[in-house]
Length: 91
Image (cartoon, rainbow, N blue to C red; front, side):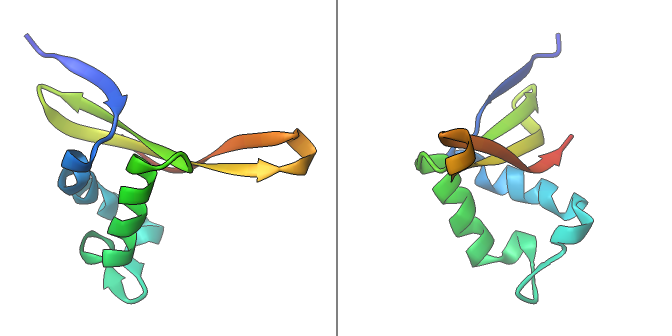
């Protein structure tokens, strides 16, 4: 039986998430480096997973990560607080 789940991403999911990122055409290069090899992009991933500035949500089937959503939280005076902005969506 297939088991699908949606959960918060963890540091352990980093490699699986980065394997999905080349699917984003605009994310092919980060400062001239393929995104899956970019230390800057990986630092952002780790920040999203470990801080309160954003989140990573993964979709997995039978333990394999097949999709990811990342969001960042932005403070705005016009909202009197924070709002979430969808950054990456891969399914």
